[in-house]
Length: 178
Image 1 (tube, helix red, strand yellow):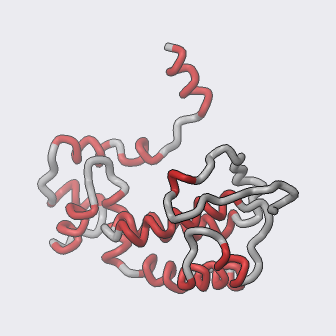
Image 2 (cartoon, one colour):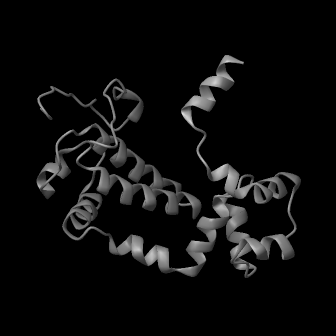
């Protein structure tokens, strides 16, 4: 029972078996600070082509979004579906310190930071980002001046900032009506 609601998690490790009917409110979720750090780590893993670790983090994030009471102890966190012992330790570290050493290491590593930057460009996947990092490219200007880009990659680079912006819900509704 979490926050007065009876919640049952699906048996097994399949995310598709879990109900998505629970409301997810990022403003009032007591675990939001932890979720944000885990999401940063998942994005870094995804952009560095470590899809299985990214998947593990996404499972934990999905579970924590459904918890409407703060996860406070290692034992409580470990009992949640989709969270193993090592990830539970990282969650406890975030709760106690407000940060995660592994995330800080990744954020300060120049190669990983460049791969993350390149991975956010539309039309560029983790393998291409790694190739460019191996060639010594580190900035968007390096790509503009030195890299051989496909048509889609040129568009992704040209509209990099615009693609990262979220479209307001009202605008999406207007487009839907049209």
